[in-house]
Image (cartoon, rainbow, N blue to C red; front, side, top):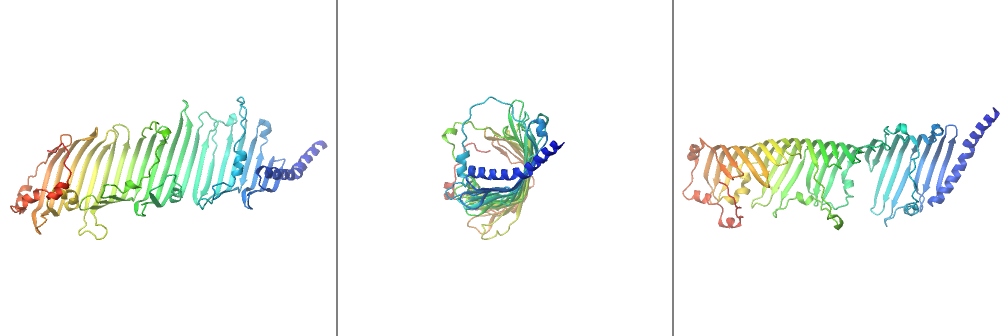
Length: 572
């Protein structure tokens, strides 16, 4: 009995009193020599009966200064007694509290740990060994709490911090009994003020190698990270926040094919994009995407919904015909000689359950016509349901907006009234087909004058049009085919004026047209019928003998010479 008491006493004295100072002394000595940096440990505690050990106040000092390069407040580890039964390490608990890592990149773009890379970065080549059975292990309750990583980039004169790092892994093991059990990894951190949360579960030793990782982002400041784009960006982003809750699943099928599936939702909020001169080109309140599944390697994506709230887009066509938005597309680097022979990857197959645009605003300026065309498209609402890349997949489309003429920014138009445009129908992408009904109400003819000014030698003083058409159009071998039918149009208060005459030479209080149609394949137009228009037109037209030929003769000789010649294949 006394010998048992003696053994217990020996273990207690050795574990509690003798071993801790020896471990502390040897650890400081050996690590200082190994790292070529001063290493200090505040305290080492060992409990031989609980099989636990604690290390407190661990610090590695910078090589060229008094600052701390690496350290932690406390490391606690506890073995399980199953270690002796399984003949394999079984850690019941391991917790690292307050770890700190400071990294500095000097103005010469050398890192503070550069010397260690040369010392540990290139291990000697080992002799090939026979495949052995992997070492059995079981780690439980692994935690990292309150971590900090600080990066001082002196070359770019910027500082970055990752604070509040919390990592927990409840269980990971390659024991046969636990092969099919999911571990639960988790990571939380604040990167430069932006919160990140990643959770997951994995089967690292299962045949499928199935791994799931959940990524949660909140209020990520996009402008800060776009500054590090590897390619020059011809635009700036004054504002923009990113939120995301995504899950990525990586697995291996029975045929040894690797699949990476991404699902979840992401949203960009309060976004603004400006050109190189600082002028706002695109802004929106929120762009949200809900993804059912993105098969990255299989090049397929199933999107439940794309929602765009309160977009504002400024579009401009310059005198040379170039588009302002085209100048915002980054120039991608040319393919290297080694990659030019690579086969291009095929297109993504996609399905989109719904696309919704609400409260949209588009400002359009076309400077190509002699008289610039400027419009404001607002109250834009768009709904697309069932859009897909599969052959013969048809989607329903509903779109509506108001269209108003605007000035050049220096003066408001005399009478800014809005036209209303609505379309409801279907669209098919493969092959391209469009079918539905288009309705335009209260369209001012003078608003479109810049586009037909060169066709007539008269000015439109006033006039509105209401138009309704049914379209059934397809594109075959690059040429449009199909019909535009059921055309009905009503003109009201039309007044035409000759350039050298103050009074209108033609007035049409009201005129209507019904059942017009056009065949795109044969290029044939049928005007339809107008039963009651002729009498009203005759009573209201007051042309002179010289005015009608002049108005119908087209533009002046100077304008005619500047017009392009018509393409072959005229309409009838």
